Length: 360
Image (tube, rainbow, N blue to C red):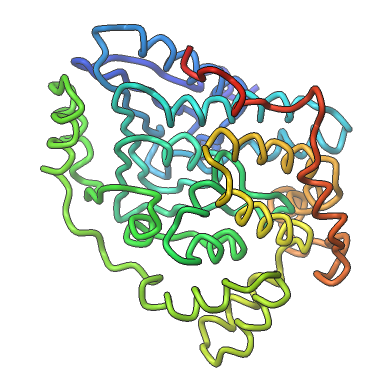
């Protein structure tokens, strides 16, 4: 057991009327595990009922990032062993994502540094989302044979035009300007001003005061890259299939589009097709809870497929960056393969959309 393992992975304290939640696994880039998800959920339940708490602020320990995502190594080991603890983790994690979105008090997320996967889930559903010049925001799941979850298909599906489709399929990380453009964040605050901002938030007692304080520290974000590419992104990613998207990108005559096609073709073919379908379906669902229910189905199915273990092996374990996907090509992934990921789980359904309240 490492020193970090012995420390509390979620730190709680209160400054003024703001309850601070700090993800405290800096050596693992604050990767989220089951214990942490349960602890954060309990902290929010407590803060909601505590009249002395006016707002919640979530940050990550260390200077490298808020959270690099879920604890992929643990999921890898669980999948290899044929276990099921990862599904229990996702059940609680997705319930936490829903609680954050519906939390009745201001929920402020400092999205400094790396914010990926599960890190997006504990931040981008909040009320006040702050990015800095160090922010790198991504849903990188297709690169490990997985599908965007934690409400990622809800967020990306709501991004302007087809920007969300581009980010989901390429697994591309974006900086502050593009995170703002895509609706994943609200304000840009230079990292050197975060300590001052945090101190001033302690004196806030209302949502209006929180917003006014953040705006006082905010400034225009550095220009992103996506706005200049909207024309080809919206045109190419508007196709009905991943194959057609790749064809359009490859034949567009735009170097950046051709590079996107090449990037997409390195990802899991199954994950790509399921991701595109999940995004399109998410746009037709009426709530975050319904999308999380759908994501639980895709996650549980992906857990049983070979690409998740292979993708994590190639990217995280052996780091050879040479995953052997199965099936190996887009054309080999059938409609039935994709449909399987959206089939009912029966009595194992997450059932958030049918729940009366996630904050009760």
